[in-house]
Image 1: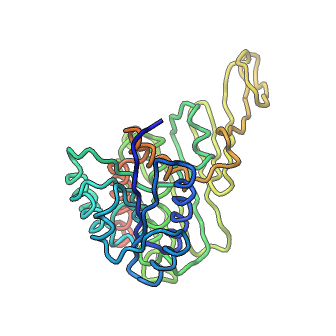
Image 2: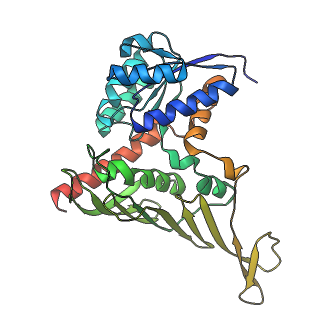
Image 3: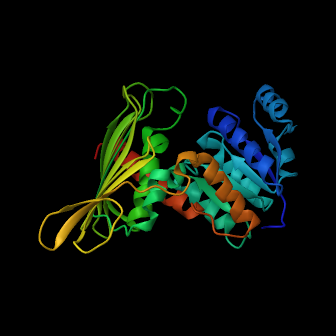
Length: 330
């Protein structure tokens, strides 16, 4: 167990920021090494309300909170991420940045340059990496050849300051890059702004350098919610339901292979195994809480973060290219 102590603060107390506040408070209550120091929001009334709710300090400025914390959780609008992270890096403060890491590739690359040589932890909030449905697949060998994802949401004015690619599709971009382990070679995309001034529905086809192809569809003007991904590889078909935290795996294997799941013989030598893998404590996993716990653990025990600044940059790079292609009509 670590003997280090950690003073952690948060900036950005909107809808998602309030969720982070509640979870950081829960973590601090059970981890004696962690102190939830306080919060700062550009709206002083919101800052005061959160301060009173959790009996923590209400900071009056970003500089004030940066002077008293070892780690900062950034849950502000995307357009402000770069400036805040830049100031935190200048003071060698560990940072957790909600996705997308920055508004542009240039900003993400600048943060990477600033972070070089610094002994601090920087984690990006691509929360689906901590979803039980995806965590359950870690025990399987993943060599996807084709991936199809659908991420649909009902319209909500919150978040329309960026396109649906940066708001929703970027989750799937990150997961696909993580699973395939290969850079993107070619992008085809189309999309349209329907209700907001930004792209509200989009489709992109990614061809990766290792030959894997991914087809992504995202919409924030759907009547129902959906967060599904289907993965096809030479020996398996995998269905991932991020919304319901469930995965299904169909694997082709030899008849003498032992398994806990159902099996269906298809020849004298081969059978299909059906499994619904689950990680430990699957029913109690909260992905946002888990990513915060992982971030804190990386600081206290000097471990690598699970979603790096470079991973965040790669997702932004692909998202930027998709947006550019759509806006140019190609």
